[in-house]
Length: 258
Image (tube, rainbow, N blue to C red):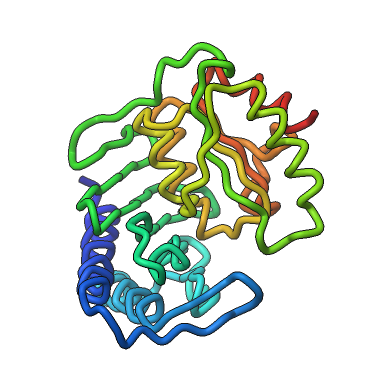
């Protein structure tokens, strides 16, 4: 395992232990709204601080782009893109589908990724050019050949309700044209599930870089394709993204445009 990825795994597990302890606590969870339908807890903040502490101890000059604390780009060469608890609303309600997401950019390009589901103890990892893994087992995207046979993940544009009409048209096309659509509430895990073949495709609009970075690299290293809704590579900037197996991807992209 690459030294950077090893530190990312250590940081993700440290954050995961904080999340697991809090999930068993049964009370005392302090919740505040960052904006409508977007929440943060002291667990998000503690998990993020744990990640930052682990990384800074190993790589004090590296920069950060983190959901709760924002940007701290001490170095432009390496930037850690962090979502300490992707699926906070699920976590608040005891819905067991959330994760830690850590992506590492080297000179602006995604180089390493960790998505850790602490509840299931599932660790997804990837390094550029070295493949994707689930608990040290190599994973690949599914062999699904067609969109009408695909199980598709999605997420609602809850931060951008002005785009609900567009999303509704997309959802209608995918509900009619696929084997099924699922919305579980953690984009990073949706990407990971595409990477390991549990989903055949995924799309969402209005995401942040920390929602996408790690998961996008997982899918690519597992043999899948990732792009924005126009088929370009600006998804980290636009927040609009789709991912799928190579054979399903063209039809998914056509549905997004439709």
